Amino acid sequence: MTDGTAMIGLFLITHGSLGESLIQCACHVLGRRPPQIVQLGLAAQDDPAEAVPLAREMLGLVDKGEGALILTDIYGATPANVAAQLLDPGRIEGVTGVNLPMLLRALTYRGQGLEILRGKAVGGGRDGVFNMLDN
Image (cartoon, rainbow, N blue to C red; front, side, top):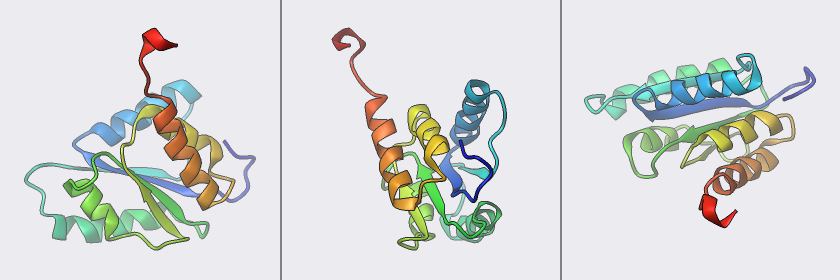
């Protein structure tokens, strides 16, 4: 977490309720709901063109001047395509393949700057996936 200083916002854009479920799991692990995090769950019938303005509005809820990291599930799918329309390198960046280890890592490092945060999120997601018999 952070010590109350400025932090980077987090925005999950996922299929269905995946984003909210991940946030709820993070709340369970952390013992509280972290600030500056929102999610947008998209359904199969949602029109991406209509989702972008809503997503842009929601992004404003978490970007308090330090930028935001968008976490989405499947590259090339509607949530990632919506997220791609919000990206602004150095200010709003995105990572695909969101999982709970990625989210927890992102929550831990969001006071460190966007480039570091992005790398830590990717590393957390990747490091959280392995064959348990090999460990």
